[in-house]
Image (cartoon, rainbow, N blue to C red; front, side, top):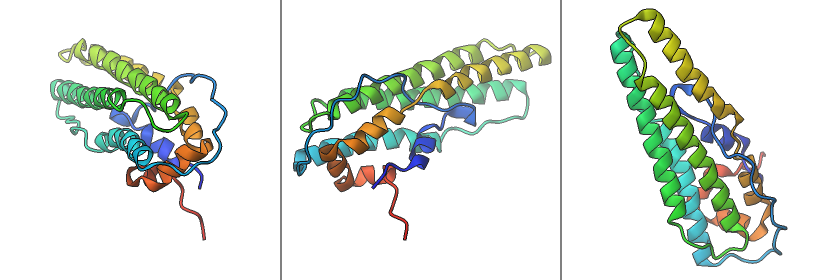
Length: 194
Protein backbone atom coordinates (compact mmCIF):
# COMPACT_ATOMS: atom_id res chain seq x y z
CA UNK A 1 0.00 0.00 0.00
CA UNK A 2 1.12 3.53 -0.67
CA UNK A 3 0.39 6.62 1.40
CA UNK A 4 -2.70 8.28 -0.02
CA UNK A 5 -1.79 11.64 -1.53
CA UNK A 6 -5.24 12.96 -0.67
CA UNK A 7 -4.36 12.39 2.98
CA UNK A 8 -1.76 15.09 2.60
CA UNK A 9 -4.40 17.40 1.17
CA UNK A 10 -6.70 16.63 4.11
CA UNK A 11 -3.88 17.44 6.51
CA UNK A 12 -3.41 20.71 4.66
CA UNK A 13 -6.77 22.06 5.79
CA UNK A 14 -6.50 25.31 7.76
CA UNK A 15 -9.00 27.96 8.68
CA UNK A 16 -10.47 29.99 5.88
CA UNK A 17 -9.15 27.44 3.36
CA UNK A 18 -6.36 29.90 2.66
CA UNK A 19 -3.26 27.87 3.48
CA UNK A 20 -1.84 24.37 3.74
CA UNK A 21 -0.01 22.98 6.70
CA UNK A 22 2.82 20.64 7.44
CA UNK A 23 6.31 20.35 8.79
CA UNK A 24 9.50 22.04 7.80
CA UNK A 25 12.65 20.13 7.01
CA UNK A 26 12.78 16.82 8.85
CA UNK A 27 15.97 15.25 10.10
CA UNK A 28 17.67 12.89 7.65
CA UNK A 29 15.62 9.70 7.50
CA UNK A 30 17.01 6.69 9.31
CA UNK A 31 17.60 3.63 7.18
CA UNK A 32 14.49 1.48 7.21
CA UNK A 33 14.73 -1.37 9.70
CA UNK A 34 14.34 -4.94 8.52
CA UNK A 35 10.72 -6.05 8.29
CA UNK A 36 9.41 -7.39 11.57
CA UNK A 37 5.93 -8.20 12.72
CA UNK A 38 4.75 -5.28 14.84
CA UNK A 39 3.89 -5.91 18.45
CA UNK A 40 0.39 -5.14 19.75
CA UNK A 41 1.99 -2.28 21.68
CA UNK A 42 3.53 -0.94 18.46
CA UNK A 43 0.20 -1.12 16.63
CA UNK A 44 -1.52 0.69 19.50
CA UNK A 45 1.18 3.40 19.64
CA UNK A 46 1.05 4.03 15.88
CA UNK A 47 -2.75 4.04 16.03
CA UNK A 48 -2.70 6.77 18.67
CA UNK A 49 -0.27 8.82 16.55
CA UNK A 50 -2.47 8.45 13.46
CA UNK A 51 -5.55 9.31 15.52
CA UNK A 52 -3.97 12.55 16.67
CA UNK A 53 -2.87 13.57 13.18
CA UNK A 54 -6.19 12.56 11.63
CA UNK A 55 -8.07 14.21 14.50
CA UNK A 56 -6.60 17.58 13.58
CA UNK A 57 -7.78 17.14 10.02
CA UNK A 58 -11.28 16.19 11.18
CA UNK A 59 -11.42 19.17 13.54
CA UNK A 60 -10.78 21.54 10.63
CA UNK A 61 -14.02 20.38 9.04
CA UNK A 62 -15.92 21.46 12.17
CA UNK A 63 -14.55 24.96 12.63
CA UNK A 64 -17.06 27.67 13.57
CA UNK A 65 -18.66 29.25 10.51
CA UNK A 66 -17.75 32.71 9.27
CA UNK A 67 -20.54 35.30 9.47
CA UNK A 68 -20.19 37.97 6.78
CA UNK A 69 -23.14 40.08 7.99
CA UNK A 70 -20.86 43.06 8.63
CA UNK A 71 -17.18 43.75 9.27
CA UNK A 72 -17.48 43.44 13.05
CA UNK A 73 -19.13 40.01 12.92
CA UNK A 74 -16.79 38.88 10.17
CA UNK A 75 -13.77 39.84 12.27
CA UNK A 76 -15.24 38.15 15.36
CA UNK A 77 -16.03 34.89 13.56
CA UNK A 78 -12.69 34.78 11.72
CA UNK A 79 -10.92 35.13 15.08
CA UNK A 80 -13.12 32.38 16.59
CA UNK A 81 -12.34 30.14 13.64
CA UNK A 82 -8.59 30.71 13.87
CA UNK A 83 -8.60 30.33 17.67
CA UNK A 84 -10.40 27.00 17.31
CA UNK A 85 -7.80 25.81 14.79
CA UNK A 86 -4.97 26.98 17.08
CA UNK A 87 -6.50 24.94 19.91
CA UNK A 88 -6.76 21.88 17.68
CA UNK A 89 -3.15 22.20 16.50
CA UNK A 90 -1.94 22.67 20.08
CA UNK A 91 -3.96 19.66 21.22
CA UNK A 92 -2.33 17.62 18.46
CA UNK A 93 1.15 18.76 19.51
CA UNK A 94 0.48 17.99 23.18
CA UNK A 95 -1.01 14.60 22.31
CA UNK A 96 1.98 13.69 20.15
CA UNK A 97 4.35 14.72 22.95
CA UNK A 98 2.37 12.54 25.35
CA UNK A 99 2.75 9.37 23.28
CA UNK A 100 5.99 8.44 24.97
CA UNK A 101 8.72 6.36 23.35
CA UNK A 102 7.67 4.15 20.46
CA UNK A 103 8.17 0.41 20.63
CA UNK A 104 9.01 0.55 16.89
CA UNK A 105 12.47 1.60 15.70
CA UNK A 106 12.31 4.83 13.69
CA UNK A 107 8.77 5.76 14.76
CA UNK A 108 9.95 8.35 17.28
CA UNK A 109 11.57 10.28 14.42
CA UNK A 110 8.25 10.33 12.55
CA UNK A 111 6.45 11.51 15.70
CA UNK A 112 9.03 14.25 16.25
CA UNK A 113 8.54 15.42 12.66
CA UNK A 114 4.78 15.59 13.18
CA UNK A 115 5.32 17.48 16.45
CA UNK A 116 7.50 20.04 14.68
CA UNK A 117 5.03 20.35 11.83
CA UNK A 118 2.00 20.89 14.03
CA UNK A 119 3.96 23.32 16.21
CA UNK A 120 4.65 25.36 13.07
CA UNK A 121 0.97 25.13 12.11
CA UNK A 122 -0.09 26.30 15.57
CA UNK A 123 2.38 29.18 15.57
CA UNK A 124 1.40 30.26 12.05
CA UNK A 125 -2.28 30.22 12.97
CA UNK A 126 -1.56 32.10 16.20
CA UNK A 127 0.24 34.79 14.19
CA UNK A 128 -2.73 35.07 11.83
CA UNK A 129 -5.10 35.27 14.80
CA UNK A 130 -3.00 38.03 16.37
CA UNK A 131 -3.20 40.01 13.12
CA UNK A 132 -6.96 39.44 12.92
CA UNK A 133 -7.42 40.78 16.46
CA UNK A 134 -5.69 44.03 15.47
CA UNK A 135 -7.96 44.72 12.49
CA UNK A 136 -10.04 47.90 12.66
CA UNK A 137 -13.54 46.79 11.67
CA UNK A 138 -14.93 50.33 11.84
CA UNK A 139 -13.16 51.45 8.66
CA UNK A 140 -13.83 49.50 5.44
CA UNK A 141 -10.44 50.23 3.85
CA UNK A 142 -8.42 49.40 6.98
CA UNK A 143 -10.57 46.31 7.46
CA UNK A 144 -9.84 45.07 3.93
CA UNK A 145 -6.13 45.78 4.36
CA UNK A 146 -6.13 43.93 7.68
CA UNK A 147 -7.94 40.90 6.25
CA UNK A 148 -5.45 40.83 3.37
CA UNK A 149 -2.67 40.70 5.98
CA UNK A 150 -4.38 37.76 7.71
CA UNK A 151 -4.69 35.94 4.39
CA UNK A 152 -1.01 36.56 3.62
CA UNK A 153 -0.06 35.19 7.03
CA UNK A 154 -2.12 32.04 6.44
CA UNK A 155 -0.65 31.61 2.96
CA UNK A 156 2.75 31.10 4.58
CA UNK A 157 1.39 27.67 5.48
CA UNK A 158 1.77 26.63 1.87
CA UNK A 159 5.51 26.42 2.52
CA UNK A 160 5.06 23.80 5.24
CA UNK A 161 5.22 20.10 4.33
CA UNK A 162 4.54 16.80 6.16
CA UNK A 163 5.47 14.69 3.14
CA UNK A 164 8.75 13.47 4.71
CA UNK A 165 6.97 12.08 7.77
CA UNK A 166 4.38 10.33 5.62
CA UNK A 167 7.12 8.86 3.42
CA UNK A 168 9.00 7.61 6.49
CA UNK A 169 5.80 5.96 7.63
CA UNK A 170 5.57 4.23 4.25
CA UNK A 171 9.27 3.20 4.05
CA UNK A 172 9.75 1.79 7.56
CA UNK A 173 8.41 -1.75 7.09
CA UNK A 174 7.59 -2.44 10.76
CA UNK A 175 6.01 0.99 11.21
CA UNK A 176 4.07 0.56 7.97
CA UNK A 177 2.84 -2.88 9.03
CA UNK A 178 1.72 -1.48 12.40
CA UNK A 179 -0.02 1.43 10.69
CA UNK A 180 -1.82 -0.95 8.33
CA UNK A 181 -3.15 -2.86 11.34
CA UNK A 182 -4.17 0.23 13.34
CA UNK A 183 -7.74 1.33 12.51
CA UNK A 184 -6.92 5.04 13.01
CA UNK A 185 -4.21 4.83 10.32
CA UNK A 186 -6.36 3.42 7.53
CA UNK A 187 -7.29 6.96 6.40
CA UNK A 188 -3.66 7.52 5.37
CA UNK A 189 -3.33 4.56 3.02
CA UNK A 190 -4.59 4.36 -0.53
CA UNK A 191 -6.70 1.32 -1.24
CA UNK A 192 -5.45 -0.84 -4.12
CA UNK A 193 -7.27 -0.03 -7.35
CA UNK A 194 -9.14 -2.89 -8.95
